[in-house]
Length: 110
Image (cartoon, rainbow, N blue to C red):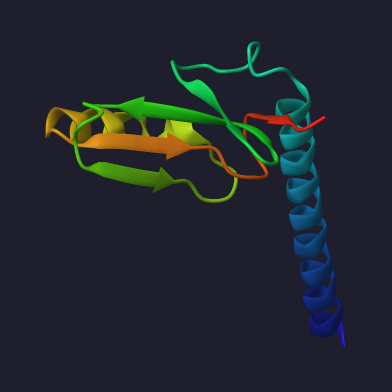
């Protein structure tokens, strides 16, 4: 009977840890999403207007180059791609990275 209790306790502890981690990620996203785009961008980039509000975009390379679009995964942001953007720009590409939910730099539509 003891091994079963230890197993269940381990499962419950793992689930609680996952829930706490997801809560921390959500809080971090809330902070990023409620600040103005002029306050937060840590790299050179720009806000691009969309029908849902402005979204933060980082671009490198010649505008006439073949465009390459880079999207990040969960719990990341466009700055993750900076070394890759610089490398691809040096190859002549127009490298573009944009921010996705939940960790995005976005000015919501009012």
